[in-house]
Image (cartoon, rainbow, N blue to C red):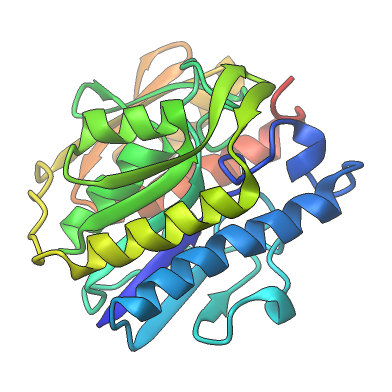
Length: 276
């Protein structure tokens, strides 16, 4: 059984602030250790369920947060950037299931460190007209590859967003949001025990085939900057909906990969710190 684990950072046990998750932040070094401990709990759960191959993708920010020496040796690590598939680099149809660790709610939604991919540069995203963030796009892209998302960890509102998107996904709330930068924290050992048990149970359950997304899918993104939206229609297939909104159609996962090109363009045009 081959398992794919995508690991973000904002939804990790104990982390609540940009200083916890951004390189150079006063608590970043502690944050990356907490990140490793959450993903190791998921790895242990996968091994207990019989996983024989586990691939972990460091999916947060610079994608160099997990130190290889801190990762459980039962897993292999994809680290660094750029990656053509970003948060889902390395995911293939050969994987039997996907687990997301440390995920967060979408831009504009309540939740600890909520955003969609680029801090406040992206205001809203829709997939086939449905509001979506990193959680929904990951689930839909994996489903297009025939890989079910079986478990996700994050704060309680990220878990609620996941359950609205796909109620079959097992979720583990490691903290309860009080605001965008505050949460009631679950004790670390309790949270990691819950992660391990949930992953084992999810992977031990009968295998399900995820519902395939619409083909072609329609991805719509509203940017904070009109400059980004003005440039993106230079990419074939991208159209301008209004001064700050673009859309494109195509099959997933190709559309997900193209979205990372959009973000590269946006990064070249803007220089704003996330979460502000």
